[in-house]
Image (cartoon, rainbow, N blue to C red; front, side, top):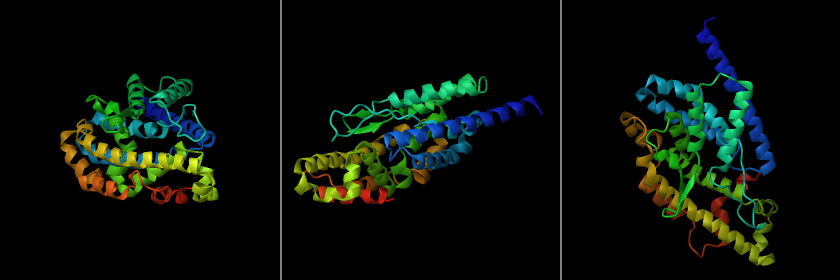
Length: 300
């Protein structure tokens, strides 16, 4: 067996071991933090979207870029949300939040430590830099003007191809999959960030809440309204940022990405979201609950 083959086999074995470790840690996070959005299904969706992007641009890439994708893209997808760290909640009936970059930094620290302990010398410095860049590329910041989140790393024209693919796949539900998947992810994120609402939904008590606890009913209505408005603003932001964010891909692949991959990212789609989403100050708790359709995500 040649040394190149041995090195390739060692890398394959190491990647499998790292992914297995990451998924085990991910399962612990899902259980301990009661996660609804950051689950195995999210990983599967990002894997699918990443593969679609990479398959589309593959004919336009260099051999080095293709090799980087083949080695590291799926590893980065599987590990990018491995650790979830939430801030302390000031009030039990409030939305829990994550500070920008904290979970990703903790993920990278644990991931690189594990790689060093079980696969010393297997990953090159370039591999490590790509892994770091990819997971950091999923860090979101808030744009107060657009009232939506975005990924600042996508502004870097020299961002590695693996990192750009992962970042766009991570936030790619609307553009790639359309309105239903986009709204589904929004509902799951609300459940994950508002755990106090979950038992009220499961027991059905939320339906009587305006009578039994009007103050809490209004509290929840305001949180739902904030999320629904974010859904509209985020859709507008994804459309507005799209041309800028895909400039880092080969120019010859841009047209295919725009028309075949991110085919739903259109003015008409965003307008439909705005028309369908309850964002009025007068939107009732009942109307908001009907829009988010939480019951389908809380079935046993």
